[in-house]
Image (cartoon, rainbow, N blue to C red):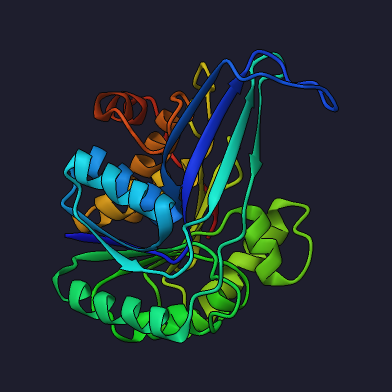
Amino acid sequence: MILAAGLTPAWQQIMRFKEVRAGEVNRAAEVHWCASGKAINVGMALAALGAPTHTLSPAGGWSGQAMRAEFAERGLAATFTPTATATRICTTILDAAAGSSTELVENATALSAAELDEFLTQYYVLVKRAKVVILTGSLPKGTPATFYKTLLEGTDCPVVLDARGPELEAALACRPRVVKPNREELALTAGGALPDRASVLSAMRGLIERGAGSVVVTQGKAAVWIMEGDSAWELTPPAVAPVVNPIGSGDCLAAGLALSLARGDSLLDAVRLGIAAASANVMQLLPARLSLQSVETLRGRMAAATRILG
């Protein structure tokens, strides 16, 4: 079983417009609602890829109940720890005329000490059955920056950590198998701009020196950079069309990567599956509801990795 765990779920509203005009009344052509947020997306993507998976996330209020209901309807294994406040609402605005997506993000509400303890209790039960764990997402306000470190200390299997800043820094000493920030998150963690490839590679090397087993850095549709040991590579995602909704693509990459590692594949092969899953995700409306056939087709179109260091 692969365990996807995180503290910042969302009940997602996706609104499609023929055109969005600032300062005017805009009427949506379509509106959809679905469970989302990083751990939720990872769990959804893993299930779509055929992996035995379990999702662990807080949930509260009517929006949390809606999230629970979707998982139940899809027959997906999940543990939702209760919260006093409702799960946040995030909104994606898709503008067909501009070909753009805009994300309106409600920050996750702080969790009480009791709510965090319940999450930890459930995690320690579930992680005993996990072959790989994905810890993903920012921490709600007031959560100790050492929270992921605490989880890692109670984890014996490989961990894919998708985090940034102080929470990432604190967890490095526990030697996560893969650290997966995007370029912006890596810059935030490094404490300065990363204007070129050399600066990105230097920041990746810094994470490895402080404990990361390997580092995978994404940057939207541009090349993905991978570093393990003394070597680094780049992989270029396949061109896809149409691009419908990019939300959740990084989470799909994490899911494919973790599944491939659980099967015993090399890191490069794992990233290839992850990129294929991310590429398939952008062509559909709802995040992480992947077509396995599309993922496999895109993986077959992946070019060979290019070694760029070592």
